[in-house]
Length: 438
Length: 162
Image 1 (spheres, rainbow over the protein chains, first blue to last red):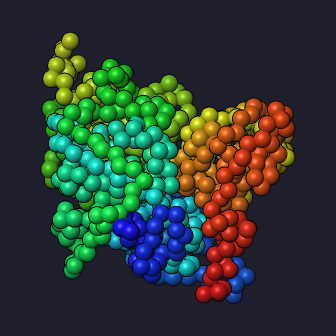
Image 2 (cartoon, rainbow over the protein chains, first blue to last red):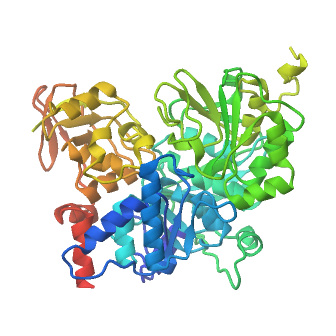
Image 3 (cartoon, chains in turn red, yellow):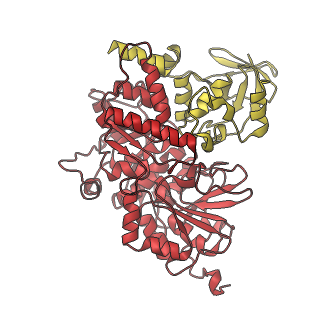
């Protein structure tokens, strides 16, 4: 019987000839990732060793990635102290894949991992963050866990008691219309599947649209797979994966890809044609409350956020800059931009995007998670509404339970920043209110 | 046996259970104070000590969706709350098992605030309405972690065997 990509990866990592959905396996882990919650991972890790007489040492420090992104620079003494303790642990164990708060090699974990080639096709990647599923974009099996489970991997080098997930095959065909892209595709899919439609399952992406999509776009769709409940989104590695890892991530040597068998068994197949897709909006307070932009256009917004592990990459900033060039952010609306990494920030400066954003009145912040999860930088006031390129709009997500968050693509976010209301970037009659449009 | 102390709808996120702004607090001994913090009244009841250990949080489908923050599970465990839900999101379910918080998967469950529920190995009996609802057993691999008392002792055992 044929295997899906994830079945193949898990079989190999577990030393088995084959694996199928429902099997229990203990795969060797190629990479672990954690961010500021490393503080809790360290605590749980040390507890594992209590009373054993053994020294608490990670099984292979070269396979640990630690990245600060959730609260940078620290918003208060508690976070600052956590970060300090993590730095000490990193130094003690010689963890090289550490990305501190820096303007040269810092950034959001889900950008840093692919950008530095830490993730590769066929890898098993375990991260203490639900959006670890992003890394399926380069053809690996990457899934999010809690801190204790990560601590367990640090101790053993394997993930314990993993149930091989069933796979839903998603076949995407067609060419995106202008101003429509990967974010609209994944929002549309989440709306169709619902927020729990892929719970305990893998979304394996296929089709002409995916083959032509850049790794940056694939990171968007894999990133948000968890919003349909998926354990992982995965794009089987191909020429683009190899190109990205060699050219953009500096990976040397052979990069073997893992492909599904022709007779792989899928739980179901979902087909999407994007050629007539409109910009999609996830409305409060659930990511699966997805509507075409026509149904929500005109809604007033007080804050626009462009960035996050979903949409803070160079192509995202490029389309936003193209729309905002020579325009102004509307009065009564504030716009925040968070490039996903320092490298992207620098590239956006070189390309002139940062200047466009600032001249338009946007505030460009340091690379990091920003206001996405409501910790610092850009909380909402009571009764306020945000339009964001981030990935979650749960009640209270942006720091205030008395506020609302709509999710969209960078093109919609930029077009809407100019008008101060949710606006369709395809709408040519869209007027800049500063210029007296009606 | 436990009383339903709060009845929740579907898609209750971990942002609801444990808001992001308290994520710098990580220790299981400190997280309970922020349990359901944005639900001001319920949070106050929890902190006042008036919610008995073993009380039930009754939820619809997809409880615990979203962020993998383990604080959501450890905060609920701090008050010894039992989740009885129609379905639970993967990461939250695993976190609850790992830290020893109790979760019961009961797809057909019906009940109201104040109802008395009795959980057996196979069903949830709503003693107030007299109706019983079958529960979904966890896969043996997950049950093994529960039986060991959580993932820390389970991993410790594996470590010593290795």
